[in-house]
Image (cartoon, rainbow, N blue to C red):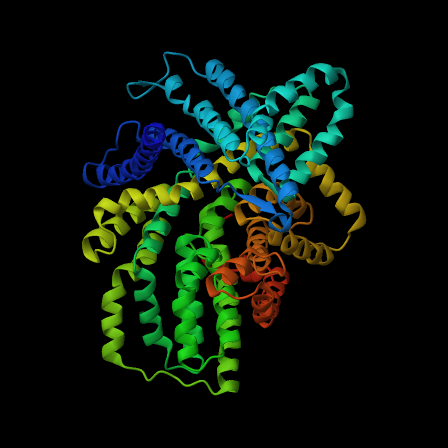
Length: 604
């Protein structure tokens, strides 16, 4: 048995090494570029080319690991409550659908590579065409793992593996009647979205369906994926993700909690305010409020309850306090900027004050609750505050470093992300020594399922976006909406409601990739500033995470605090109302977002 598992372990180890090496090199080249530019007034030869093609490796090797861990972004409504026989058949159908889509897109990527690159094209000294075969390799490995993740039993595995053959046979028989088959296929894909099929498979399936109906070329899907992944700002996504994982794997959270407790605990409601600020701070760096709940939830709840806050209040506060997605260098902000083609620096600036409004709204509620319940304050101790600041100084300086080098124009966004990674590696391995050097590989591998899941979805979605734009679907949708909704204010209210519901059903990255391309033309049609629309979009997504009964953070909080979902839902209701009021201010007072630009003399 061990001899059979040995080749598999070797393959897994090779995946881990190659993906981590690709990620490290993606961070190393921009750092070398900054050093060469600053010291020698030159650059590193072909640095940008190396980085943008290394992202291809990070994407597809990461997607392979995501499949290995069975952690692709997906949404399943109550599938865990389905009785075993039906559940196994649903999982088999998901595996079969995944096999079909990965096979077709993988085969298309081979054709794309053979036609788009010639043997003479080089990436340094390496043939570019050979390097790009990581795309079909990634789809092939994912296909095999979709089969392996089918329920146990030979029958289930055979059905999952035979999916492509069945589709090919149906295509041969029903080829002349493809248009009649479109609706059943669309229904199957839509059902798969709500029954656990990975979102990138559903998106890729719709892309294949639409290009097939229009007799377009399937090679457009990998072509658009390549175009997007080699974009100038894309490397910032895996780099900031890695920075967030390094931070979350260290004891930085504990040090920051201690610092904020010392700085704000003496104020009325100060410990609640401190919890809000630390969650916001941590979420802005990790890019995910759910990570904040899991990483800091237990410690923060203990401190709040120890100092007189009720358990219900503490649980609700920790669950909703991750509003840091509106503060740089938040990953959702970067991804929305890429999808919407907005200047990311403008998005960072525009989102800052709306983020402050949400934080202040929560802080005011924490203050009022503390006054009402007579919560005791922590006496201010200057010595303890200085000691806590000294302990956490390196983490506190990180956002300052990011803001200075990026907003001063010293570094590009990608270079800033690379410097953040290098800074955290030095701090957490050599200064605080929270993470031994030998464990850096483990941290890189832990971050891969997130990177792979997000980047493969982003890559495949570009094919669908290409079709929608080419078919002028967003423009038709905007025209239809304007015929029935004449008021801009009413449109914004309806948009808020729809986005909150959608965000409660989807991951933030899936919502950005799938919904944003449809919403952006609508905002343009109603004259809404693109940055303001982006802030509205992301603020709604954060509320969607908290919307009962399906908001993601509710499930994570239920898991972290070992409490029923209904109990968690009740605890967040007053916080949800407070945040919804803040959302209305952000939505209907656009000056909160756009008013800063004239003051800073920023031309847009």
